[in-house]
Amino acid sequence: MRKLCTALLTLVVLISTTTSVEALESKTIERHNGASAYAEWYEINNNATTYTYLSVTETNDGTDIYVSTYKYGPDYWFEKSGYMFTEDDVFSIDKKLNSASLSEINIDVNNWYTGETDTVTIGADWTGTGEISTGTSTSKSTTGDYVWRSSENSKYRGASATGSINGLDLGISTDASMSNFKSAYMSMEK
Picture 1 (cartoon, rainbow, N blue to C red):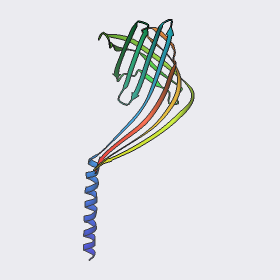
Picture 2 (cartoon, rainbow, N blue to C red; picture 1 turned 90 degrees about the horizontal axis):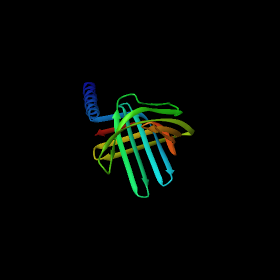
Picture 3 (cartoon, one colour; picture 1 turned 30 degrees about the vertical axis):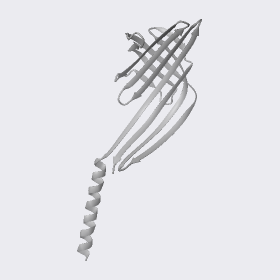
């Protein structure tokens, strides 16, 4: 009887181990740490309105940069935007969100009306203002045997930014902020 119990227990352990290994083989976990900053500059001069938007997001993979600028008046509209990804160390941000800086970089921008592409040089600096806010979000989804979970912890702080495009000073931003985040994603098939 004792041998039978030992054999059954061994069989249960083997089956459990096999099931755990199979579940582990179909499990994927991703973790991302990063930081970001954005700024907007808005100016009205006579009948001309100029708007510039800049966002920078840095993760373990590298840095994503997006810039958009438009200018319009009573009888014209002008818009250019561009995106780039770089593995170069062009963005730095203080962990306490006191400051951030984007080194001057060259980025290709497209004129959406003419189809022409230009290269502009852009750089910016952020200074934190106000208190730091924190946010946490989690989600879970189950479809049949498939389970997906995500969680994110973020810190945000308002900022004042200065910047330039092709050496032209953009002045003080009308809106800006900085953030850092940690996110995790898990998918598993039962």
